[in-house]
Image 1 (cartoon, rainbow, N blue to C red):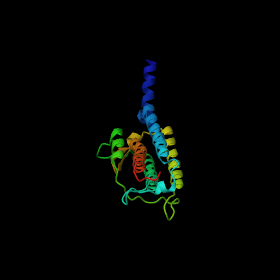
Image 2 (cartoon, rainbow, N blue to C red):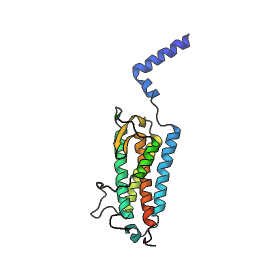
Image 3 (cartoon, helix red, strand yellow):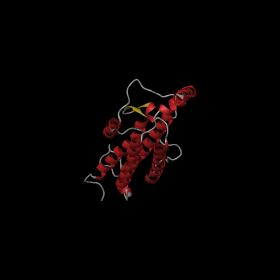
Length: 205
C-alpha cells in the first residue's frame, strides 16, 4: 500500500512541476538517429566522390547554356545547405510547437520529393564568404563541410522532440526531423545533377 501511494504522490508531483510532460515527450529513437546520421554522412561521401580530382575545365563545363556547371551546382548547394540548416535550427528552437494545418510529409516522401525537385532556383549569397565572382569550389566545400558537421553533431546529440515542430518548405510541410533529412536528400539531388554532367559526351576527360 505504501509503495502504491508513494508512486501516486510522485506522479502528482511530476505533473505539478511539469516534468511529466518532459518524460513523455520522446526524443529521436535510436533507429531514427542512426538512419539520419548515416544518411547525412553517406550523401556527403557520395558528393565528394563525384567531384574528387576534377580540374578547372571540368568544373566549369556546361552541357548547354541553360544547364549550370558543376562549380555553379556546388555554389547553389552550399547556399541551400546553409539556408536549410538555419531554418531547421530556428524551427527546433521554438519553445511552443509550431504545427501546420497540413500533416507533415513522411520521411519517405521527403526523400522522394527532394530528389524529384530539379528546378534551379536563384538563391541569395552567403554573407562573409562570397566574392565578386561567387564562391570558389574550395570555399564552397569548406562552408559545406562546416555546416554538415554542425548538422551531424546536432543529429547525434539533440534531446529535443524534433517531430513536434513543422515548417513549410519548397516540397511541402515537413517536421523537424524531415528538415534535417531534407538537407541530406538535397545533397543527393545535386550529386545526381553533377553525375549527369560528367556523363555528357562532351565532358572534358
